Image: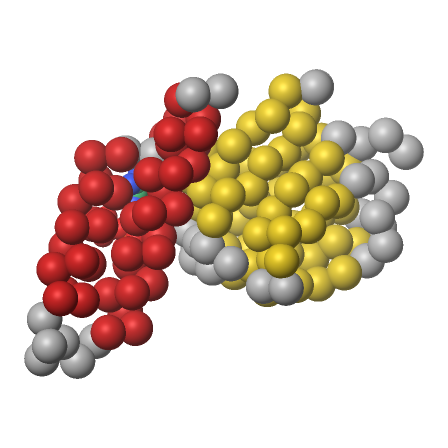
Amino acid sequence: MDKLKLEIVTPRGAVFSGEVEEVHASGSEGDFGVLPGHAPLMTMLRVGALVARADGKPNYFFVGSGFAEVSWKGMIILADSAERAEDIDVARAMAAKQRAEERLAKIENLDFVRAQSALERAVARIRVAEEHAHR
Ligand code: ATP
């Protein structure tokens, strides 16, 4: 078995569906790699990068919070949001970063956790887009 079926699904639809050789993702317990034939597992995901190697080439994705399931049938990522690195709108992520930073700077801010996770998503999107651009 030299291929693994990978599906990245969000509430807005499938972002990726295909056969890959290897996946690297950010699990809640740390980064992890999955090769074809990996034992079944289920883990929560951290906001961050996912790299899937297909036909020898790495494909970079931003993945928001969600979870990953590996079974004998393949790997399914269910995430709040996900984008291919090349589809990331860096200007939009920069604006989201600035908005979140401004909200976090206000002492009377009552929605700290929401602003913090928005900041986390924006920073991760910028990083994924930059890593992809400098590859
Ligand atoms: P924003 O404040 O810019 O909407 P957000 O982090 O709140 O950012 P999400 O809730 O994670 O956005 O995603 C909402 C939808 O917009 C998803 O479909 C996601 O893929 C898309 N999206 C969000 N930010 C970007 C971006 N910078 N580039 C491309 N797509 C994005």
